Image (cartoon, rainbow, N blue to C red; front, side, top):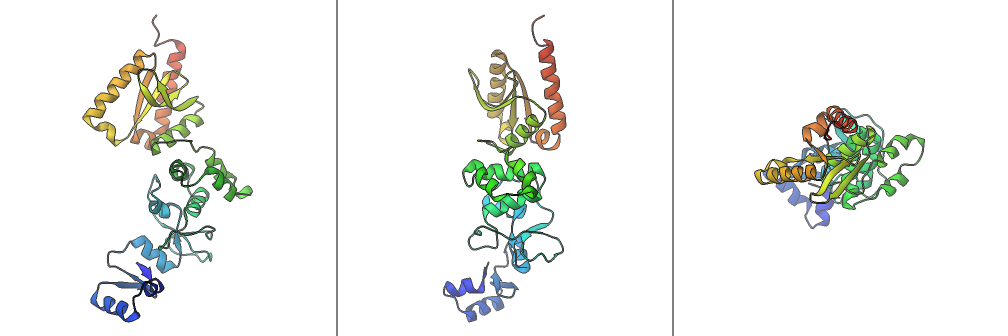
Amino acid sequence: MARAGDFRRAGFSRSELSAWVRSGRLIRPVRGVYASPAADNDVLSAYRENGRLTCVSGARFYGLWVLHRADVLHLSCGNGVPRYGVVDHAACDFPSYPGLPVAGLADVLVHSLRCLPELEALVMVQSAVGRGDITAGFLQRALVGNRNGKARSVLGLVLPRADSLLEVLAHTHFVRAGFRVRMHVVLEGVGEVDCLIDDCLVVELDGSTHFEPRQVKKDQRRNNASTLGGYLVLRYYYDDVVHAPEAMVAEIRAVLWQWKLGTFAPS
C-alpha cells in the first residue's frame, strides 16, 4: 500500500498502475493511494481519513504491549474535524513511521498517555522503555504543562525492567495497595523471583509458558525451595492480574496479616 507519488519515485508509471487496477492486482481505495486487495484495514482507513494511526491503534506497528484492542480507530488527523468512529488526537510532533500513515513512536506514546486509562497507557510505555526504544525522561519533557499532569504521573510507575505485561500491572497494584515490593529478587537456592513483598512473601506471575509440564515441575520445585528458605509463595496468572486484581491484592493482604500474627510460625 502506498501513495501514487511513492510508486512513481520507485520507477512505476501511471499507466502501469492503471493497468494493475483494471486487472485486480491493485485497488484504489482513495484517490492517489494504491493497495493490494489484502491490504490492512486500519491503514486503509488512515489513508481515507488523511490521518496517521496513533495511540493504541499505532501500538502494533512498534510491537508494544496492549491490554485491549481498540474498539474505534485512533488517528491523528490534525484538523479537529469530527469523524464518525474515529478518536482524533492532536497533531503529531515527531517523525512518522516510514512508508505508512502511522505516527512516530513518541507521538503514539504521548497520545496514549493523554487518552487511555492509566494501566493501558502504562503497559505501552513500559514495553517501549524496557526495550530501550525511548526513555521516560524524553516523554516527561514532551508532556509539559498542567494539562499533562496525569500523563506524567503514569511515567512514575515505569519500571527499570519488566519482562512481561503482568509484572507491570502487578507492581502497580501492589504499590497502590501499600505493599513494600521488590521486583526480580534473587533468593539463595531459588533463583530470581518475580516479586518479593514485605521481605517474606514471594509472588510469582505465570504466563502461558508456565503451563508446559516441564515448567510446571520447575515451578513447583522453586516453590519448595522458597518455603525451605523461609518464604511464603503465591502464584497468579493472567486472569488474576488483569481481570481480578482486587481479589489478588486481598489474598496477599490476608496472607501478610496471618504472617504478622504468627499463624505460619511454630506454636
